[in-house]
Length: 445
Image (cartoon, rainbow, N blue to C red; front, side, top):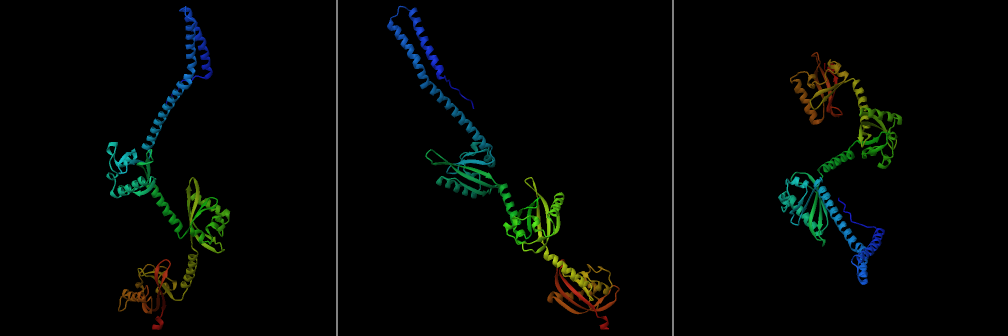
């Protein structure tokens, strides 16, 4: 902005000038008298008083008229220049902002569009949009809602906001409608600032999905810092260990580990930090003192420049107990005097045979695995497959089958067995039939 400077004389300087002017005037009058002599005394005093009057009036005119006038003119010029600069800055901001800004009248006819909105509307010049209606650039449904919002601002004089999804391109926008008022506070037009919030909306939706997964997960999820402090966790994490959220937030990871010391935990965390992720089993202690088996999957998180560990843990206490029971049952079955066979219902394939049954039929260890169960049936008036299907139909209908059956060994030797077959659910193979075979050849003979 150019600065206009007025002429300003300091009072002391002006006083010196006045005094000098008085002497100069007196000298000038004496000069006139000597030059144009003879002049009357009255003429001399008249000239002297006129000169002194001019000299005395000069500072009065200067301070009361000239200087205030020049100051006013200078301030006016400065104000105009400041206003022009402000308008240029405002126009620059409006034209370069990422938000679409436009102004409409009560009929929703465009009065102004900034560059962003002109780009969205595919117009280049003012003449291409000025006076045209909003509905000429938008879908009918969007236009109806827009007209309603503009009318509300005209009627109330208050600004309002609206979030919408454009029918034109499917993007999300946040519109702010603001009244433009005249001197009498009447609404003359409405300005609209339309911000594209599509990316924010998608981030918000992603955050909601993450929050839903985080809070509704059946597994405990925790985030800890590298010192083992609990930073964030879901409901399952504290509920399964018997703590309230407030109680759990005060704990260190070492407070819930039933086996490892704090030093051992820090060592494991350092290992995870090196590898990026890990999976292991630990034992957790509940608030009531119970010990639970837990399977943990953990990985490193980088959040705002700091490293954290995210751990997802699953209580496997019941599974561990079931595995031990199955191991016990397996040992019992392995050493039973009868032959035991497991057949998968889905494909009628053998998935297990205990040592007694393998010896009974003359097969090596695991040699029967994967074969159809009809392999063990001897041909009679029915084929081995027909015999198997007859037994399976009964199992599908009643869930159990008992009876005598002619089997066949690997070397082709037929022999009689008494079999008891029932159905149950296996933790690995799903629905299975368990068949207990007892060799009754001697009894049949």
